[in-house]
Length: 300
Picture 1 (spheres, helix red, strand yellow):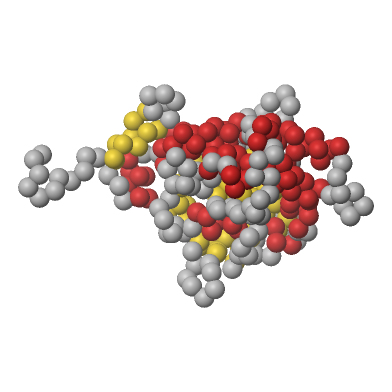
Picture 2 (picture 1 turned 135 degrees about the horizontal axis):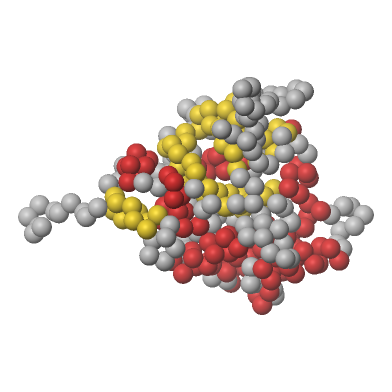
């Protein structure tokens, strides 16, 4: 039973006026949620259909699924880059697209799949742009801004790159710089769309280790809530606290990777015959595809 339900009674609902498009049911369990979310582009058929999703606070949520299943589309809607056709995204119980842009930027940071930096901009200047939501016309820069930028660069290990042009960096370094800019916003919620795209395996691990650290509370910083889209199911199972598997615009399963990553789920979502074993390093589920079908005439 949900902790938001009362024994013997109907689940509690929002008091007062419900957000437009909200159809009732369980209120959000965390700060960011979607209810009845239907998404699409122009006149095409919906990419995501009637999706309900709760993002756990202070954890890493990873969205996985086959190509064109709606992963990145869902993330775009969670970041208010795409307005729903129906349903709603809720931030702190309020409908996202009705909130002031500044308030959203102070609460939620979004790193798209292929961000583009202005030509010749330095690392320090790019990271500093993360402070724009906190500035006013009468106060363009402050000691608080300086401290936030320094902390973000230190946490992402790019302080030594401060004076270098962003376009002169390696792929992994650039990703760390973009994440530093998002951290400089000092938002509690961080959305990352395929942050490991185009990176080699070493840089993928480097970026994902950083993501894992962001959702770990320290004496200096609270745990952030991170939502990311990944293609690699094994990486998702290793780094996620909460895994969301999507297929055809709907959620096929969600929960802790240990609970939902099975051979049956891999077949249902990806159409891949596989076995699932414990990762020898972390103990997380490890998906091992079955042996490839031999070519005609090839020895078995």
